[in-house]
Image 1: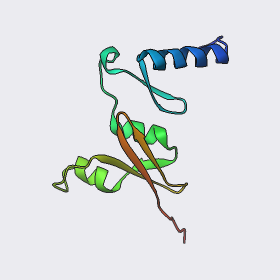
Image 2: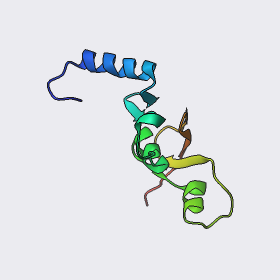
Image 3: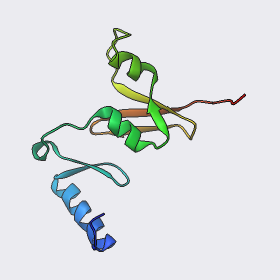
Length: 104
């Protein structure tokens, strides 16, 4: 949030920029600059962690990143102890799977 700004004005400006094509809305409260306005493409692993708190990139995504499997992975997969979700965005598909952790 911009310091000293009214939250309603900030939301209105964000919606205007999305409508004009300056921003891409990824999820509630998460925006990325559109292609002509950005100098660097956002990292998909960073976006996956921002979409689902208390999660980490794992499974096929991590194996492909480190070159341990020959397949090309199109979906960034994370695991979490929270509710599983799938996010389809303009920047890719993000899958968050549930994992059960049992403490001994």
